[in-house]
Length: 267
Image 1: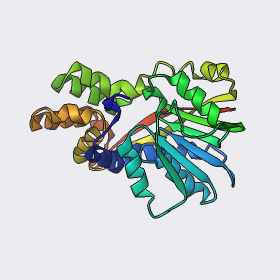
Image 2: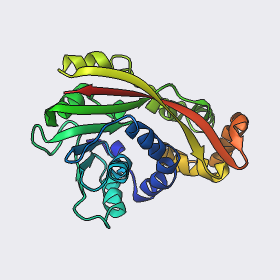
Image 3: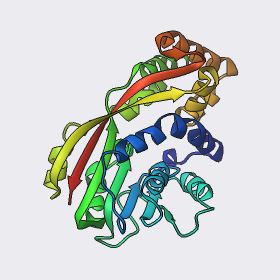
Image 4: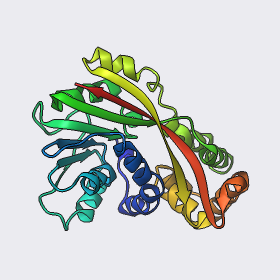
């Protein structure tokens, strides 16, 4: 697969420290509040990143759940392993493509994909693979972002202004998944049943916004693009974002609502 799917160790550390804490952990908890998981369930976390969904499953439902995480980025998986090294035997981590999951058919009763589907070159193939590894009575749980909030609109504008139009477009890429509206139809075509669509809303909290915005950018694919510029460019980007998001500042923190579409289906 192309190298664009790989992040350096420093970027993964920034991702875990900032993005996971500010948005992916709250989203995982909000999603799990709508999902039933029972003793003996086997859970798959597709595009798991550093494993926040998998870790949240264990925290919420206990150690009797079998949990496997797969991600194409080897540094993400290395971080997931590091974060769970004190829990040997509870997690099974793999570097793998979402279209080639290293598991037998009907291996899992629950399959999660939190904010990963929009990045897959072939979303249909990935969904088909998830169905293959689900049991006949299994459940698929997907989240994809709703339209970008004011923070990301400001980030995109600043990236376009100080880096490139391409960088501005990349900032909004997570919110531009063209398949979001047709997901129910795609799932039904693949044989999924009982498809439901819901909205999950969380607050993206960026602690110490002036520093946190930098970490947020560095922990994303935008990081290398900004790193190529003079240090003053990052300062200008952060300044523009803070100026555009003044109404969301709470003391030194930035708190911006973010909505996500939650799609669930049975196999």
